[in-house]
Image (tube, helix red, strand yellow):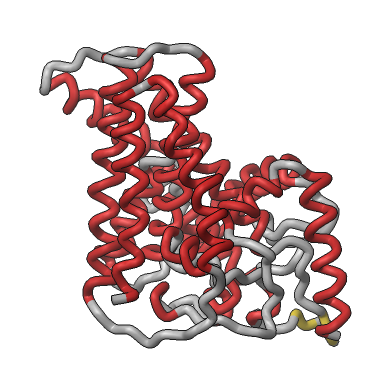
Length: 348
């Protein structure tokens, strides 16, 4: 019965549509649920350090179903923002951030999981989710770059001790994109191909989000919804905040952790090179992404079977809470630098 906990994620899109349609103070419901109710419930329910070995198509189909939900959510948002939305700046901010909690916080998490699968359907669906958030190069950089260089200064997605999130965000986004280009250039060069061909995935990744947006506009027009600038603001606005949530998670996952170098060789990635969190409810919400230590040690392990490791550095809370701390550098440093020093002391 525990497997049905992963359906918890589907509550967020439903709550977003319901609360935004009602308007008024209800528009805050999604954010209150994620950043107030979930942290409190996470604390009350507590940790679950048990490990599973589940094999069921339920876990795969749950991921696949989310793809349709996310596309539907994007279409709804474009429709709603262009026909029924009062465009004050703070309402825009609430709508975009609330949407990005689903498209970025959960959608990119699922895209990440699907991107590690071996079958082409799963990878295509993962890229589809990344397309709706304008971050398709993540598929290349995460799998071929981050997993190889994690815990080193060569990895844009590894945050350094004393580096606040806002500096990390710029570095990770810019250098991650450059890294994806370099990885793809190297792949093409090994095949004797030029960068400027249809074989270059990065070129397609750059244009596909715009093609998706154009198709979405055309589909809405087919159903009688005229194009409006609000559609553009909604689509690219939610994508920005989706990426912001992704990079917040990247920032949290490896903060201050480094792989040692001995005799010129970087040590192998282990569960000691990622922060871990085994809070039950937030792991249901994020498909066990918080068991990130085991993910890096065994990247092909499906999300439902990711293991808890006592030797991993442990976060004091789930990601919904840690995201809020990361946005306030003094509080983040006071909390995490102390934990980092303590972990380094007991692990050496």
